[in-house]
Amino acid sequence: MPFKKLRPGDLEGVEKCPICGSKDLLQDDESGEIICASCGFVVKEKVESTGPEWRAFSKDEKDNRSRVGTPTSLGINDMGLSTVMDRSNRDATGKSISGANKATYYRLRMWDSRSKAHEPADRNLRQAFNELNRLVDKLSVPGSVSERAAYIYRKALEKGLVRGRSISAIMAASLYTACRSLEVPRTLKDIAAVSNIKRKDIAKSYRLIVKELDLKMPVADPVKSVSRIATRVGLSERTSRKALDIIKKAMQSGISAGKDPMGLAAAALYVACVVEGENKTQKDIAEAAGVTEVTIRNRYKGLKSALNLPKE
Picture 1 (spheres, rainbow, N blue to C red):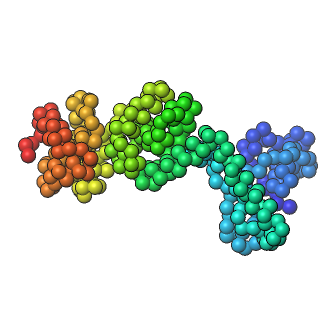
Picture 2: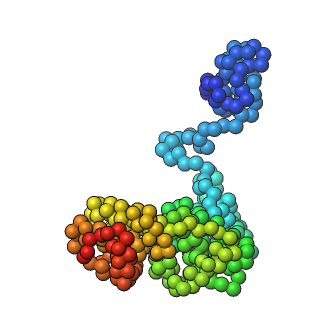
């Protein structure tokens, strides 16, 4: 039998045998019992197994050690808790279903699919999360942002903020809110470009979500935008580090308060290019940062006067 010797602390509340006092305990994974190796007393029954949730009966199954299913996710309309009827027309043993039963299984599949989105809220979530998956793929944001955006959208739906408004606009605003709350550098312009929704509409929905859900947004950090702009322009690591030093000095002096973080990062990179001798124009950096050349010039003037930077 597959006995496993327990060490002290492996199982909470089980330290020794209550009959003989021995600490030499064995665990039977098949029966779920804790047994004393000295006297054979069953110390505990029906212990939950902490091992993998699969058993291999053949070589092919040993190579494919998959678990019972995908984890739950807020980004799925049913959170991934529902089941799906397979369309292979085969039973559990792998044999083909008879022709007389195929029509029955076809109708079962049809009603199984329809029953998962029979309420308006379910259909709303399905459409919204399809849009979310598309935006996440195009923006290349991490999974934590996607989960946060799905959570914000669910709260907005509960509050009734989606009623009478565009699902795509509220979803795009929820994604932008998630990026802001987790400090992922994605601008309204970036989200508007991939969602085919006007920046003005996303900003309006964003303000509505923040106000109605009483969210506290952190101040955007321009430091996190530097590497993104530098990669697009093709600047060296030395120039990027110089730009980071300039931004840190600007934040310490207080001249960064109230300034657009993307514009400040672009101006700091331009200043770093001037100091390090890299031949990049204001137009190159402005296009990579999504700001205007006038913004870079204005931020450059403020940095130059406050930090005693060299002239162009």
